[in-house]
Amino acid sequence: MSGLRQLTVSQQVGLLFLLLFGALLLVSAVALLRSLRERGDDERRDRHERFKRELRAVWVGASVFWLAWVSGPVGATLLFGVLSFLALREYITLMHTRRSDHRSLILAFFIVLPLQYLLVANRNFDLFSVFIPVYIFLAIPVVSALAGDPERFLERNAKIQWGIMVCVYGMSHTPALLLLQFPNAQDRGAFLVFFLVVVVAAARIAQEFASRRLRRHPVARHISRSFSYRAWLIGALVAAFVGGLLYWITPFKPGQAMAMALIASACGTMGEFVMKALKRDAGVRYWGNRASVTGAVGLLDRVAPLCFAAPVFFHSVRWYFNLSF
Image 1 (cartoon, rainbow, N blue to C red):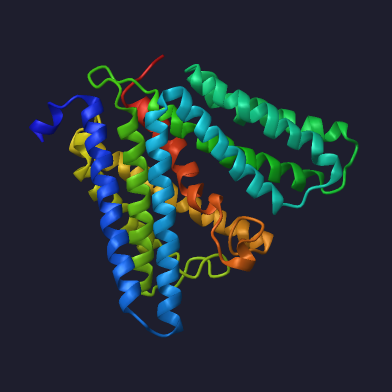
Image 2: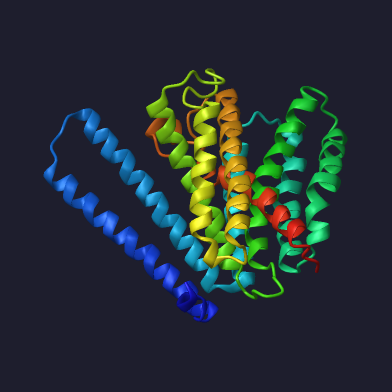
């Protein structure tokens, strides 16, 4: 560990990506060899297809993370802004909106989203923390009321507000992590993003595995037949353990890394559970226009846990370490 800490930040990040993409290449090669050898039944082929989709998603996520680091803080902010736009579009296409909501949607896509990421890029963290929860939450219903359509007014505005909160506000905290500066650990924002993504992913995998093994009664059967408190707790604890192992890439001490990982992973998995409830309400299995037909998983399915975990993780880190700008 001492040898790794003696490397420069760029060398450490380069080593991190070398290990990450090397592991993905190894897993992809093993999966390819197994697919060539196996000739199982339909269930095994379906399971293999799901694994390939998951692996492709990991490749895309790793590539996005690499592009965010290579392009620097400004490029990363623009990149995550595009992801927010696509996620919000995916969300809105499945929500019930009316012609009178077009003004609010234009406000959300072309004014709120760019301004939120502009505040991130300029490090106006105090304003960007309240811009959407305070000002935009008040502005959206005003704009909708001016359209003169009272039918399902509260429901329509709540859906738009909720989409902005998750897809724009939550996602914007991820590039904000790249801009955090610790007194004794400068330019380590990329490690914080990597740390957050890994612990949230570890919690999801552990929770899914535990739910299959334990076979406990689900908490809310009509939302998710696999979610239970025990599986959720196991996922959070596994993520905390993984976070403790990764403390050396962060400004945290081992205990701090475990606590931050526990907080982030618990929020991420709960956020995924909430998004499942929204999907059930919309009557689809996956986000995205063609997902319910083709079985392809939409972007929002991938980033939803991160959208819930990133704000809590960002503000927990900033509050605990008393970071000011």
